Image (cartoon, rainbow, N blue to C red; front, side, top):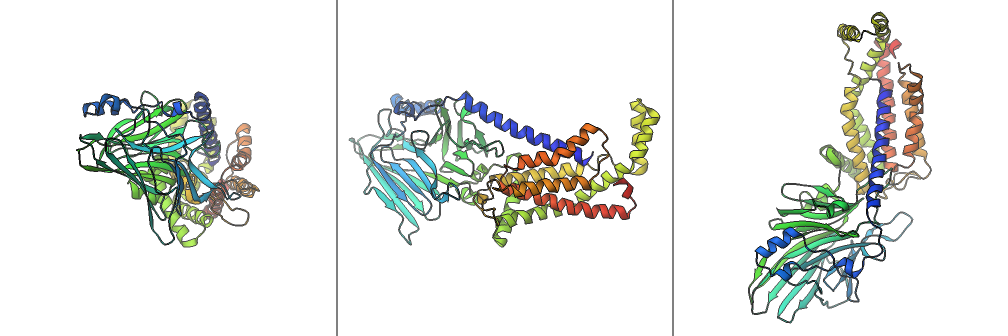
Length: 552
């Protein structure tokens, strides 16, 4: 197979892939109604999933409690603010939900000083992290907690901050909901301590969910297809994604598992609820048309009169940092989604990180990992070019066979196979090596797309953010020039005028695509081409010395 034809196939596949991604995003957006800000009625419209209700009934929770609607807290006057080195959040005391979370360490872009806001409740978009206890939350009201201050800040030199919220009902039930923040971390421990001062036993379950507007979030783009939606993990399924449409479908999430987690994903950032690993939890999802939910219900705890019980969970709100996520759950790092080639991408990400730790520049790290990968695949590359050269050497003999046998395809095929056997040429020799290389390059592509480390990471000169396009389009133009040089180093035996014209336009087509690609990706592709040019020149020289110059 000719190298140019393979490039044409790759180009067609890339165009088809990005086109399909865009069509899918547009189709999903069109299928969802565009609504204004969620009203109180909207926020209270979702029941707990049927599977959870059924199990709750069988475990003795009263029917009216099992069927209660857990109401999302609309912003009230009872809001406290908590600031740490990594988080700036707002908690509504009406329910104790996190209704706003900004990330001070991540600005919107290089020109802005405004932090990335992950959780929010505004007029156009809702994204909340809610939690509560059944038998404490009802369809008419959430518990109104109290706090001893309206603002909390992590003190200098302190490694943690505990924010306790308290509530006492008329029957003597006392609840303390504590948020524990740790310096340098985006995870928050959310713990309940319940003291039953009443005269009867009480059954309770911890519930937690992430609630987000179906439309209005970052959906990615044609040139940077990214996923926004939900994800979850169970003991049997380490990582599964759910679109907002799937959250409310007949196949919505209804899983019972030990441990597990639920999350809402977007490019570079994630929020997740991580329950206690040893608990039996019920995962659920819902979609009422304007808001999508994913959450879990913990096991039932019976609290006898005069007794106490604790309920524990962890909320993560921050970047897709694989080390931090893995510390919370062994599979939570999979929200950095490398697709089906994750088993190749993860070692490549590790190697990229190690190189960066040595050189201190992500652009240089990309160049060095490109050199490392191309060097490791050099033998395959050499096999590819040598095989192509031998195939071109046989072109006159193949043309003679075609002239001899005409349209008799059976005899022509037999004669060709005999010629290949006699000349010791493998007709697939030029195809198989590059097919073996493609998974590695695709895996590295996804590493560069998904790695939050590249966000706003500078390289040199005018490239100050490797996650956005080159502002002056220098890298894409250099990449197109490198493709043109590669074509000149690989003359083709293709004689069809249409194919020849298409191959001539390949550098132009790729350059047009890469104009909008993140500069980190273009840098990778450019240096991959430059290394290929160097390798091709060396291999061609070796072939010349072997007397195969006429074939090249």
